[in-house]
Length: 600
Image (spheres, helix red, strand yellow):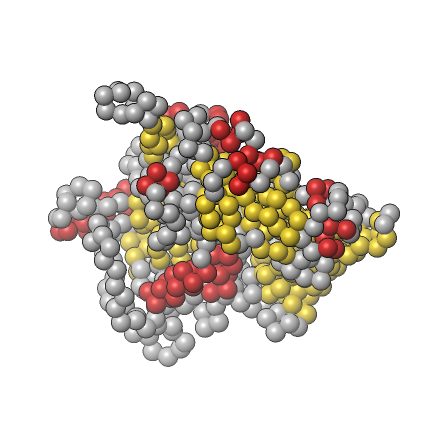
């Protein structure tokens, strides 16, 4: 079974194009180029929380129809950031309901006068439900934080003499049993204890529900006939790299597409034409994870040029996409990258930070990556929601492997496994795959964290979400992270890799470290005996001292480049465990459930 599964992953090649996304339109990251411009709207926005009892006053008074300052006082709110921690108002810190953002944007003259220019408003993340107006006109709605959405606003900004536009965004952070993540609103009706109409947001996850415009708001342009989406998958045939591409365009059916693949020095290594095809790269440089190769994270550049004849004359567009050539495969006992066993040695991250909340911040991101490399880590999971696109780009550049997780955390109530929840979950996976499908660093999708997978409706629910994700992207394995017992978990039969959260000697047998080894061995042997799949210990640990953070002397990661190998410190003992040979995966000698390599 393992060999067949590994072969299936690596042999897909150009057959992948039968799994188009159900969503309409692409979501290419806005990049400037010969045919595209970009204007970031980061900075101070006008802000107001709707403190009315109904939280509906902004809609009743139509705050979007005129400047926000005309309907009452506003605050300065930095974007990107969460609104919760910026002020000194405890009411805003824990606010649940609608908040309103507004920003005036001055546009270049050409954008407003050239009818051959398409102007797009793109919001990187608005948590949780967002409604957007431009100059008082409704242009977009989106459910779910952490993922981008956009609207073509060309007609609104090219319809008069104005050289600016007023952007209004209303955001509601309320979580219900059918949102992702789910939550419930608890109304406190005892008037001897609580004010009239008092309610609190109840959640089943252990991090703060930060809200607001968490990532950049961007205006960008394309021609009216343009490159809408690019999908790339890669393979390897001996030493030849295979780059399969599919390009979608909008605006005209009569376009010509030319494709060039450039190496890291800017030299052309392959070229092609048409909307889909395969580029072959002799002696290809593969994309390797950090510490797995002397030259990790090698990236090519796929340059797509489009020309079209329209009624208004010739039109051209250009887009450059970073491409890493690598393969991913799963056997009964191993996770393979480029045919070599890979051991996930890393962390679970969060995007939270002081003051900023979940707001994107470049210095914090670079610091995090420096810490990862200092630790000798080669991977992380985006616990428990998709991280910013810039995070994925940095992973591609530095060779940090990603388990890409959707916001499916806290799915514990029976009503959160119903059809309404399922339909939204499927759409979220479509949006996530559409955004991150071309990142070589992303090697596996995670559809949930610690769902109540022992509940009867969970089996069908998780089976459906996993199958849908596999249909969207057959090139990557799919998992979810469980904390259920191996014998009771109804979704485990459908995943490719078992990911287990367990906190021995903390959640139970508190402080008794002497039982950890036995309990861990029993857990892994039970899971492997039942499912014959690779296992990742996705979470473990114990409580820390709140507020205590310290960086000690840096660790010097070891990269094996030849010569005698140092001996691993120990090997796991037992029938279901084996140490990977250090030559296969320096500098770590991990325990890996499955058959022991002959050289170990």
